[in-house]
Image (cartoon, rainbow, N blue to C red; front, side, top):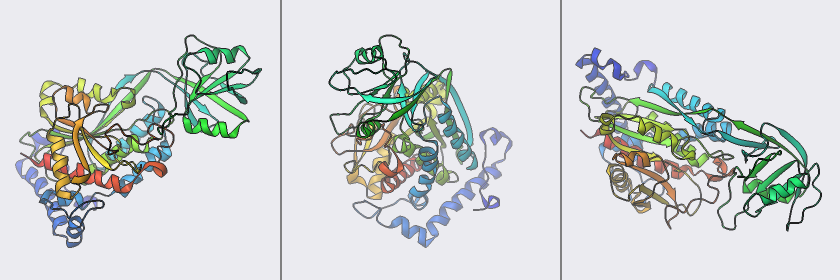
Length: 460
């Protein structure tokens, strides 16, 4: 659609200066867009067909059509290529997370939302790079800001050879600092600690904890890289460690007022976090939820609503929900009262075969406006056999909202056995588009959240 034909965007600060005629014009322009989608036979037919993976034909409400007919997982995938493939790991407060922030701001401003960024301080980060491509965690007690290049030697069965000028490589070393100190005493110029899980779940990169400072780099390697080093057997490693101090992370908030701005009916929020753990490009966790928000922001931007729409993308979730907790802590009571539902999307597109259940996860396991809305949307769309819950589950950015009494829930694809059944490559370097993204599941997530959020936003 050309710029000249787009419905006018009305910013909240302009409401007092605009007449009712202009406000009505905006509403009817948006309503005309809905009617055009529904009236278009091809769009209506496509929306009314059985959905991918659905158990029965849909029975859509009028408001479902402009969402279901227009959301496209492939549109979201283009955004995910930027976040996961180009930027890669997005560590809270570091330059990588800031690149993702800038991308999100550009995309949401291009959609003509009112976009703000909300800064907050976060703890220092201790990271390492191995061979110019593997991100690992570094110990804060080890040598930082240095680069070491040397042959590596795997230390097995507690037998310590002469390690002078070499890098000691341990796999599943006993807990504690003893192996690290022993290797350094034998001349090691760096220590690499790797973990190989005894279960199907793979180990992620980590920052080793030591009982005292040492004078060499000590790093924690993810399982996939640990296995590659073990298979390689010998060779040189180049390890660089970096301390990132004085960090600021950001929430990205995009607002669109209600079509009836003269009557405040509250706010509906659709949210996700855009940071990752060290070493992981975070395609599913939570690039998938982030790009869901971007695609729904595109689809919903001109549709008529009685409530305002707010898309929030949280920084530094992986460090303890820091972004969402900061956001909620800044809300005055009157703003808390305005928020009628928070749809948090965390890991909404995994391709892991057993993750066939779409879970409704409220903190206390009780139903609320968001879980009820998604379950009702699933029934209309034919997805209800795949939807489970609500069940009690925290561990994502819906928690701070629940603690303040706001209707909120997390939505996620996981195993039938329960919401704790995550894909084995969760939080690892293998959380990539190629290895861990299902376009079908992303499409289902878009339709469910889009239909539920739009229905809630449309209620008086």
